[in-house]
Length: 178
Ligand code: S3P
Image 1 (cartoon, rainbow, N blue to C red):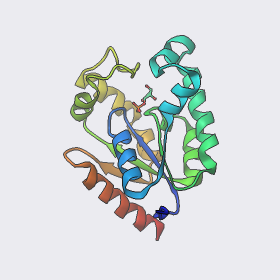
Image 2 (image 1 turned 45 degrees about the horizontal axis):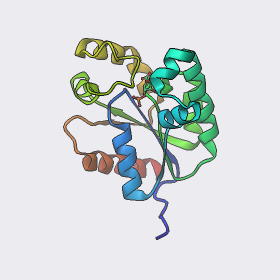
Image 3 (image 1 turned 120 degrees about the horizontal axis):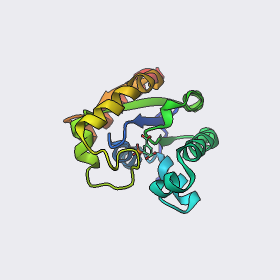
Image 4 (image 1 turned 180 degrees about the vertical axis):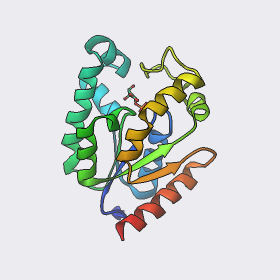
């Protein structure tokens, strides 16, 4: 079956760690046969090591540069969901790149929801030793302004199923496409 292209633009998903970018990307792939670019996964594959090891061996700056380079590289793609690592919207140049060929969708979740989703994962160096609601809430608040400024659409995910989130996302994107 030939996939139907539903949206004119790529979908660029941004969110705090653990807010559901991967789940929603996978579901958009299932629903609309969109390609998915999971930025963290590609960077880890190319470097041949986990995100935690990249941070430990090369430092955060190196990882952030890899993110920017990958985003620039992705701009030629069509019908693609680009699932960004949580730090991507913090650099102004990244936001400029995202907007060139995509609609930027911010998924939000409360710190409590985030903690529940990340507590058993050990590949997020920025929160590995700080898995508390207070730390997450504080980091989220520091980032909130930049996340919101980057977004074309904001979707609250707490208490919603992936189907409900995708329905809302599709509806909002189609309105934007009009
Ligand atoms: C980061 C988020 C992570 C990963 C890295 C840094 C961040 O991605 O890129 O650990 O600064 O928020 P996810 O948001 O996919 O967990």
